[in-house]
Image (tube, rainbow, N blue to C red):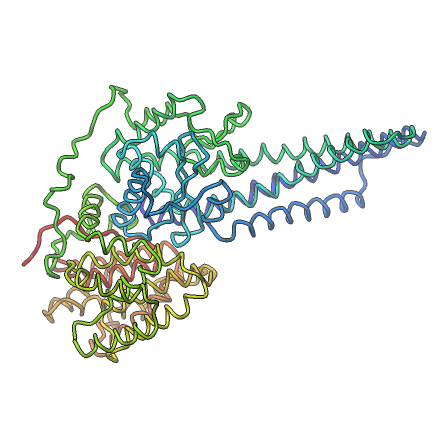
Length: 637
């Protein structure tokens, strides 16, 4: 199953969530109505009246209305509480942001593993949180999408895992991020809180009534009323736990199989089954190995790497498969701790990328199959990139406001008059720290291999998401002015601007996710024609090869023969950008065929130029799909 199919499947599972939610609400309404009938019948019999009948439409309507309003209010409250995405979940569970300047070596290893995995998969680097108060071994991923995703790790996991084990667990969580599981998980938290709100009210009623009854003496009728209220409170608690039951059915139905898939993906990503297998074995060997002590563990139990709650009742409908079964699926033979042969992936491995901006030999099917995935070669290449960027530059990319200096330095022109104009602008608009940092790192950034620039930008974006919201408009204005300093925009400037602003604008303005508007390629014929023409033109000098690349890609899409390649002068980056914004509103399955056609176009001659890769990365980024670095490969010099 590929990335786009997983996205479509995640959308369909929302329908399953709605079905179970409605079923749970129906049972809760029926339970509340039945309790009211029982109480009224009991009170009537004590007063000598006739037993209250079961069918009372007015009472049912009233009970249903009040119950639905309470459930809706509980759901909306939790949804609002979680509106900041993964960050709000991490804070709810007691997490704090990992600190790149920390003296804790384990913390540095965690950040390094997360960044390598993000670069290898071509997605935005998620925020990292550490649950310092949790001594057990666990982790989670949460968020609405890759822009607000976080990965959380308990202190116990940080202390007890080796680097390989930590990498296996992080790869597991990346699978949840890439495959669209997170959005459904965070919706589950909101929905389940609404279902459970009835039991919370029951506890409140019971505590309040018992407290009042111990404070004052009451008449017989008053005592009978108190008993009735106590019964109501107990009944509401029981009814509320019908919500718990359905909540766990929902979690179990949606979560269990995804854990097997994420374990499998972790092995594929790292080609090191002993990593995730060792992590699972450590959890199994330790008492309360993965149990989370935080009071919100129950509502977030479906997010965790391993079962975060220990109740035997909850395990009947566990969100996670048994650990032993997960280990067996990774290692059916249980032949002991075996170490995969990773010698070809070590630091000195001769992994190559774009040599001096040259071209990169690739296979079309390999490029297509890499969308939304990663592999050990990409992971090793990401490690090579991280080690290849000098410490002062990496350190600056990890800190505010220094990360601004990194981005500004990436945009500095090689043309001396334009560069001076840009530096004058920066000096007039920036803090002293930013100006000083640019002086220190600009030459080191200039010397970076071209293929290291986008990963460095990714690291900087992750840091810039932490800037104060009021600082963003000025930063955005500076970026736009730097790009426009020479009155034209290069492909790299376009890539930086679009990626930077797309991801930061989401963080600071929270625009609604684009609704699916296009499901047929016919509705995007002209836009796809522009995108394919731009890809064919950039980086390929041979006119005949350009036409062949466009023809091959357009025929795969079934575009009409009348839609020929657009001339270079009419195929501007502005038109390319407008077209991508429409593709962003297409269905996952339509995005698949468009991105695959783009891959066909740029690999038609068996190589990909750096310019083509940057455009392909921009297209994939607009479509919301991670696109990993194309490595390793043979360099065509």
